[in-house]
Image (cartoon, rainbow, N blue to C red):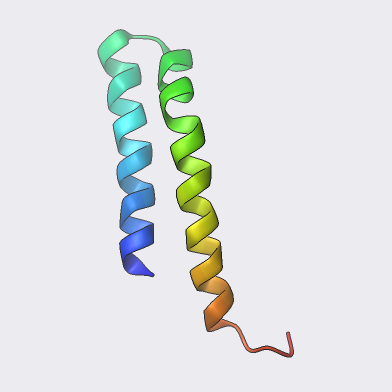
Length: 55
């Protein structure tokens, strides 16, 4: 699970670096949008495994 969280942080950091490099937030959002939600899906899947089944 920590690997997915670390990967999520790297995706956000990479999108932020792209936005700073091109001085345009929209480019950073465009670069990071799809990877962010793909990795977020796997983060939630791993959190779901940690929860009890009756919840």
